[in-house]
Amino acid sequence: MIARDEADRIGTTIRAARALTDDLVVVDSGSGDGTVDLARALGARILHRDWDGYGPQKRFAEEQCRHDWLLNIDADEVVSPELAAEVRALLSGPSGPPLDGYRIGIAETFPGEAVPHRFAYTLYPVRLYRRSRGRYSPSPVHDRVDMAPDARTGTLGGLLHHFSVRSLGDQLAKLGRYSDQQVDDLEERGVTIPTWRVFVEFQAGFWKAYIGRRHALRGVYGFLTAMNYAISRHMRMAKHYEQRRRRQGQKPS
Image (cartoon, rainbow, N blue to C red; front, side, top):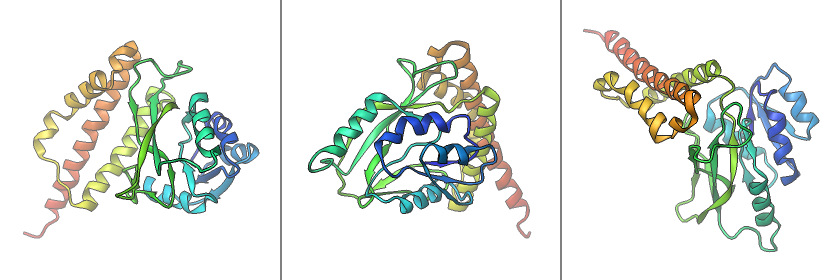
């Protein structure tokens, strides 16, 4: 688990996962709100590392773990009882898990919800995996496990409940920071997004969240979170355009 200033959420996360392992690792990148003391009191092993992006941070965490089988969860994700039972069953078998990695559903859970909405938007990345067969991508923004080409993977039925939204304001600030990282990543990789997307990115982002991610089923709050997502997509495009314009203006004539 990687964390920074997660004292309001990390306790629930650790309690839900603590019984799954004798080596629960938290890599902290400079918390000042009691995250470290709380995690340590709940039995986590704490390591410190300056923030270097999602991929590098999680690769560092992988290297510190004592076991080959790893379960990665974020500080705002809670292992459901069903998922915990599945993981225990897989790891307690005499020959261990039959596959090299397992995709786990990560279901959006909004403020006021104890569990995800029945039709909550859910991603299925690999989160339980054998370290010798998969490692986190080194990308600072693309948060994914790259499995070996011949690795065998499956999907578990239990979910991670993703409490990513503290408030609408916090969500917008978080998405704004992430858009900065995305723009830097595009620049580093030499990727240019066509300028015409400036005119449609907001609308496309809204409908992607409101309909594609089913925020429409969450009432007024769903409409507002879809608007936040649209704003963040617009800002990513605007910052990318501005950076490209500034770079072109600095070229010698």
